[in-house]
Length: 345
Length: 263
Image 1 (tube, helix red, strand yellow):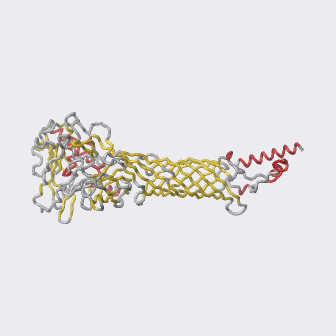
Image 2 (cartoon, each protein chain N blue to C red; image 1 turned 90 degrees about the vertical axis):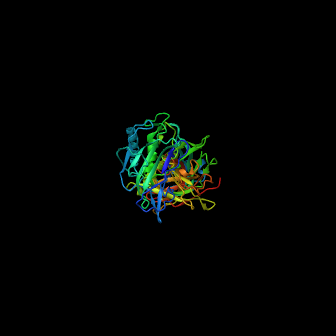
Image 3 (spheres, each protein chain N blue to C red; image 1 turned 90 degrees about the horizontal axis):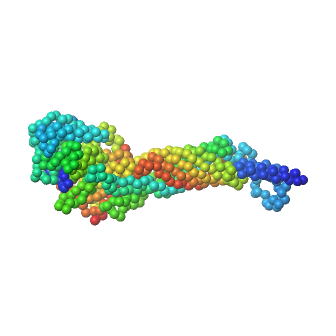
């Protein structure tokens, strides 16, 4: 469903494959922005909105049995296993995955197996990998998810210079597999030849990869952890964490698609969310109790469709702004709703 | 005659010493002898009201209590500076500073109530409660997308201290025949901060060190209250564990001024 790109942008998404035996009801654009911190997907079923997530664990997955991109099947399986273990190690969430075995099948086959492997897609010259889902459109349950890594690029499992770090990319894509969308906590700059180069990021789920040879994205950041635990909260975590909600407005009107980041000055943690409707409403959940600064910015460090399946109406015509008060997040509750006022550029 | 005069001077010196030492009870006969033996001094008016309280009613005596109520000014303090740092695209490179935020406590005025117990003429223990409606604010800088920076208007943070202190009277420095009693003090306590929305409580410790002076006004010969007086003190407060951008302790000055009643 989402893709991970190399220095320059994202790529055409694979559409969501429908579970044929179920009644297909309209999906909210495929990738509706988050109801909680970070970015997650939702599916609309009648009047209900369901989070796109796995309902049963462990997630059973296969790995393709072919070497590609300079990586053996065993090395690929090792990187995949480490990435799943990393997600399983997020203390505030509860997920698990189980390696079933190697398979000759390709990723993105509708075969009932969640398969991770290489495909050679030199035509996708800015795409390092992609994830797609098979979902139950009534319940939002993910029933199958495949990931492909583009063997047109050089890969490494040891952080070799000039090669992309497979484990970092697997971690990003398996984040999608669990239902996470893209994070916007990062800075990029435009490249002369088009596209963008990432300068820095503070989320594994930032849509643009670090350069070849960089292994920094092997560890989830607070934003990633908040996203995962919003989907799969460990027992008790709801009572231990809190929520900030509110709206972003300009001239009294809601701003759609604003990126709002909560910053905890004491821990340095950054957790983001987006305004999800014309009223400019946002919610950032799974925050550690404490005082937060809120920063609102337009989404301008990657293409809008890296974050929104339907970017129409997304407003980027405003300046960065801070909420004029620190927001106190209590345990197990929500801070009073805030309003962040922005002005046009 | 010369011998009697010498004795009188010696007695006067003793009286002066005891007053300077904070013992307010000079014997009236000593005062008379001193006045009689020194004609030059006798031309001066006598002290308006010599302190003649019995030892059992002297403020500051061992085993006695003192209660005070003060207005308390808490000075500004830095809550530290924190940076929002992103992981750089350069492996092992220096973190990319997205923006910086500096936290500040603004000065505020609160109230302080204390009760002290005099262990000896020099040492006392004191318990105090302080309430201060403090204000905190933050200043954002180094945000490349907001070059002007941002300063928040500030928001309320209700602070409560429950303190225990050791007070040492500086007896050699007392003045006004023992009515003025300088002291130094130090102690620690419990810090509780309640954010404006009352949705978050932060707790920690408060440490303080400082000094001041108590000046006892006219002593009372009867009643439970032996004397009323004025007190003022200055101190350095160290908040630990409360609101801070870095988790580090916050230093700020404080001054209290009020009234004291000696029992």
